[in-house]
Image (cartoon, rainbow, N blue to C red):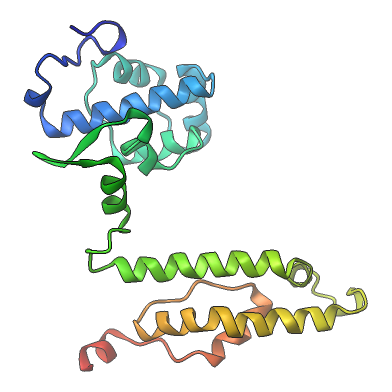
Length: 222
């Protein structure tokens, strides 16, 4: 028998719970755990969601945690996650809850498998490669910014006369590294008909070196 704030969520017959109710129960438990980890009251969480532009009132949060409300909307999930400084997918498939989860009705998988399916990282999904390229692009771009930090900071100093000695050489090395390491990924994205992420404004001249963005008609002809 269950006591406390989940009294209305009967665990005596867990399999009898509707699939969507069980998922919502896990999400709400994740929200509650995270809120308490941050030592945040329900009112403080409500206040944070209001500041973010989509208030989840305190009474809604209380009804979630007591089990009186068994639904959560996508906007509520997003804004609650942002207020709790965590990704929405982490609330959906929190590893802190442990065990397996019914990703689809009657189909239980471990939480990482559920997470990877939800985010598209599962290699068996057709869109996996597209997501992989975006992640790879972000990884390389972050590495280049760290490795060429001084050169990257020059992008915010538009007056070249104020650049310290040696800056031109550092920027040239930065641009060369982009061509060698980032361009192949950006070119592949263009070949697949994807728009490439924006670079800093002063580096956008590099996009002229990439193949043109393919249209839907181009892709149909292949």
